[in-house]
Length: 611
Image (cartoon, rainbow, N blue to C red):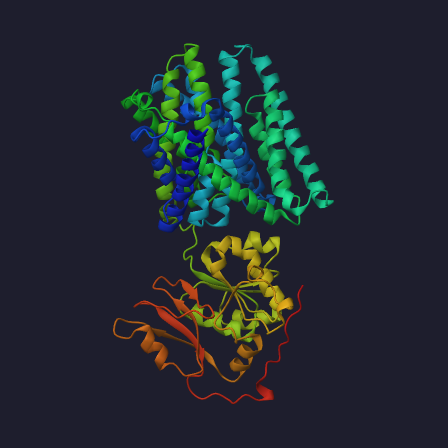
């Protein structure tokens, strides 16, 4: 028992450590997880999970995969398909058929696999799982449409590929081998039942949430338990059909407009990150060097054909006339990292085929694992570079999103726009956006917290948020909404009025206080109307930040620092200003002569109500 406890603790610590290092160094975490698994498994021999965990090994991986697919389904929004539906439909229908067929032909003619094994290998290769795609998308910041293609294809094709493998195995080696009619009826019944269970389970659970039958603190665990329940029940009818049920349940629940869907998605994302880390380590650490040594140059040629010929050809042919740009087709045609489902399916059916004497079955497992490792490394490191070259990612990722169109914020946006910093001003009143529009600054007219904003704005270009409306509660609401996506250290709002402690919101319910604790909405507006403006000053080796601050007017207010790559760092109240040579400090103050403060210079705008 102590030995098993230490093993599980080691896996969790190494997995989350690899995730953190990946985030810190901007390296795909999946690559680090694969390398860490190889290091503690085949290379150093510290751990062989299948031996250490025994009979628990396979069920643990299966349940984790179901939970990951359920979390992926929660992230699929029908609204995303508004501009990507045709491409997605082609990728999950014609693209699947072409990928399976071309990969099977390559496996038979290049590697010499028998047709049954080659067809099952082709079915496994269509799986481009969310266990790899979603972490890569989180780091790369693709534009919404190409990200939708990869995300929908990966999440939907995972269960489709697994079920196809089961169908082919049942036809070639099952109890009813060779009986096509029996195989199709059995498959149709299992898939239909899985879709029904997933749909009904998701709808009933969502209705229960809406009627208040489940308390808030139990919604996340209840959703996870329900997903695992429909997964297990569907698997009783058709092996691996549970993956379809879990995915469908996530899609249904994620599109019911539940008030607490944001918290539910975050809870599931936390679970999925942990499970992806653990399962990837388990699978790669369990690789047997003896099995991998069975591969030869025929195997290498097959893998090269699948990566460089089969995948691009399947995508390019299937998406003809689908409304996708050449750049999008090129990106999707290259990016297809395989993940946990492919490894798990190969681990089950490869040995089963070998036991039944199918030629080349002993190569199925090592071929799939090498395909996984190769695509994870190649696509993990190349996605960001290729997306930038094809102009399919946010050109700059350090811009500023401003909530509230005031005179002061319009001036700030204009100054940043002229300095080449990505900036956008959002407000639900058209007249408040007049000044930034006339200055050529991008604006968003509408509610920033709406689903429309989530689907239409390219948030990947913005690394920080500044909420500067006249309503402190609304500012806090906006910051709380964007904190999980941007990070709490990147969401700022103005200082609140001094109130009694019992009326003051807790720090976690607000964004970080920008600039200074005594600078509030009315202060900025008054100073703007007195003639204050925004000015930028550069920091050099000979003119450091201390000298710059000493040279500013006594009442000037440093606002943010602009990096060499036009990224911004907002300044937090109570924190010292730090800037390196080559960076610029944007400050707000009176450079020449400004009017003294009078009633006439007070702002005409009124704080907007909370809507």
